[in-house]
Image 1: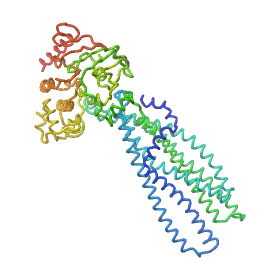
Image 2 (image 1 turned 135 degrees about the vertical axis):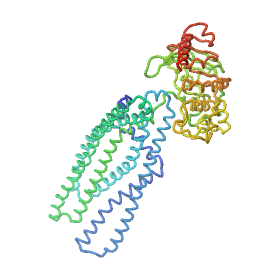
Image 3 (image 1 turned 30 degrees about the vertical axis):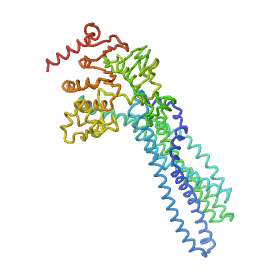
Image 4 (image 1 turned 90 degrees about the vertical axis):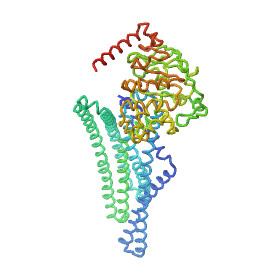
Amino acid sequence: MFDEEYEDLDYSKGNVKPWNSIIKIVLEKKSEAILLVLSVLLLAAADLTYPLLNQYAIEYFIEKKDFTNAVAFIIFYFIFAAIYGLIVSLFILAANKIEIRVAYTLREQSFKKLQELPFSYFDITPQGWIMARVTSDSRKLSIILSWGFIDFFWGFLTMIGIFIILLIKNIQLSIIVICILPILLIFSIIMRKVILKHYRSARKINSEITGAYNEGFLGAKTIKSLVIENKVKDNFKDKANKYKTSALRAAAFSALFGPVIFVIGYLGVGLTLYTGGIMVIGGTLLLSELYLFIDYTIKFFDPVISISRVLGDFQQAQASAERIISLIKEEPDIKDTPEVIEKYGTVFAPKRENFEPLIGDVTFKDVSFKYKTGEQVLSHFNLDIKAGSNIALVGHTGSGKSTIVNLICRFYEPTSGEILIDNKNYKERSITWLHDNLGYVLQTPQLFSGTIFENVAYGKLDATIEDVKKACQLVKADEFIEKLDDKYNTYIGEGGSKLSLGEKQLISFARALIRDPKILILDEATSSIDTKTETLIQNAINVALKGRTSFMIAHRLSTVVNADLILVMDKGQIVESGKHHDLLLKKGYYFELYKTQFEQEAINHLLN
């Protein structure tokens, strides 16, 4: 669906908008741009000079039998060949530099943009689409641009130079070349549209394949436990076959493009040879001039063929250019105003010296919210939380619990209404200011490849080993860390694969607390921890919550009994609120939730 949406953009019509941005990247570095222009000019000049040397040799050494300058000519010819080799080396160096820099820049800009985009973007954008942009599309563009861009301008300059020389030498023979050009142009335009259509289709299916790869890796355990390997294989095979069909069609038209251009070009060479031969027999043209004309005509259509091939490559890359530039140019739904940026800076260049202290008061004023794809979640929602309060959010799935904390964190913004932090609309301060004061613990812990120390220190990049140890001691993570051979320098594997789920969650708790956040979010953070581990960290969490505003989305109601305020949510509204004991006495919605869960836990205890 996402790729289909992008088919409706202006880019899909094959215009030059994405190429404008990419060419700016190619020409961004002046030294490389100069090397590029110099190599192209020198190579074009060398290609124009070579036939003139051969004409001189034929005219003087063959037709006139004059060998007076033969030795000097041979020496100059060898020198010219050596210079030509150096020019080709310069040409290759320029192309390689551009290839490396373009790939780096596209990936760097794409990844930077992904850091700026809000959660709402990732809600509607498949992972496969993003991965294909940053990997295969950037690689394809860098290769085509590095060689195609230089080949195109070399061919263009060579064609112009040859055309001028041909007109000077003989207008009658030049008319043949002029007549062939419109045929080449019309054919190129027709094939351009056909090739672009099929390559766009192939790139779309390639995104789906990349996504299927990703799902296959991440869901390997689930696939095996459900014994659906064969179904997954068949689904992937179906996508791969569709890609093969689409790619083969695109390749077939691309393969047809070059040979047809080649035949049309050499038809012009044949006509030139025929007409020039008659002129030589009639004595109106020298043999050396005919050779020069044939050589230049061949060299004229060689760049035409080269440019046609490059254009074919650019048609193939058009879809890649459209998509990767659409990512780089994507405007975040949630961003700071220019006035806020001027005072507080950006996420990549924050002005922390202007950051006000965050106290922790949180207020929802008539807030309504709905996701881009979905029903209304909150309608005219109001809430007033004082700093230092421990708030628990409970209720069935879809009741609005996660939406509330996501709005507090400004991962999303209200459709209408205001959210105040310390009695000031949080849009009047920067996103970075707010996130600097947040601690967030997810239900499923997300760790990074590296050591325990590195993962905890992500919460505070300038943290010392003592800071890390203190945070780990707070959540009792030090008890298992100290038993490891390398302790805090233990490598935990990709995504923390070498740790148990409970150990990973303890690390994520420590990472959240090391930054001493003023607002702490626990998004069902203990639901994936076993009862023993939960008991181990509960007291430490209670200590950590003191002095800061906290919001706990709770699955296990046993974890919220000490909360200052429990908000019972249903369909985006607070249906009950109060302390644990008071809510039980009401024997309402919360009472029924607690009773049902208590009975289920009792049954599970008896069965075990």
